[in-house]
Image 1: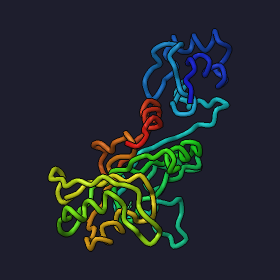
Image 2: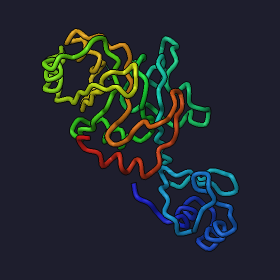
Image 3: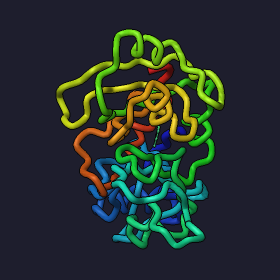
Image 4: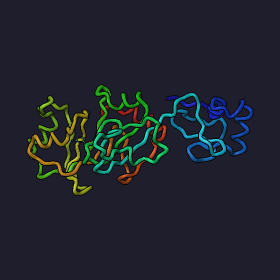
Length: 243
Ligand code: URA
């Protein structure tokens, strides 16, 4: 995902020849991600930046790639459609995001809240979900009871669940975000993995919220809200390894 100078993008997008593209920037007709373009040489990312001329969204031959982060509320399915008509995470996106081939990257259970990425970029999905990239995912957990030191150690070393041994996890007791009482970082994405890990040790998970993927934090995005990831955030996320 490389940047190119804005004027090059404008030529590719059919604003005109280089001279006309430069003039359009100077006349303030061009915006990049909602702000007037600062200069015609500014670097832009054709796949991710939203660039307009006279208010019209421009497209180059690069397919527009979209990456959104959502704070998923409980109750929504992490799929693109459901044959039983239940609401999915796509249902809370505004109409302009329909028909762009956007889908959730991985899954959160229906009852799990927090950080979920949505994209139409297959390469990015591969980089974020393939186990060889070992992206850590951090969850806050509201669980019944307290883990004994032995249980915590077992969880950290690996538990033999019915689909195999879990890879090492990091578990810590927390007091900063009640009712959540534990944080756990795992590097896999098996179905209902965190719930099953606690259940294996006899602890019921009452609430589960994902707060981080690699080095990308949910931050203060409210439940039900989403935003576009900035190109720098995507670049940083791709540099995460084992975090
Ligand atoms: N682990 C779970 O148990 N549920 C999720 O939604 C994500 C991880």
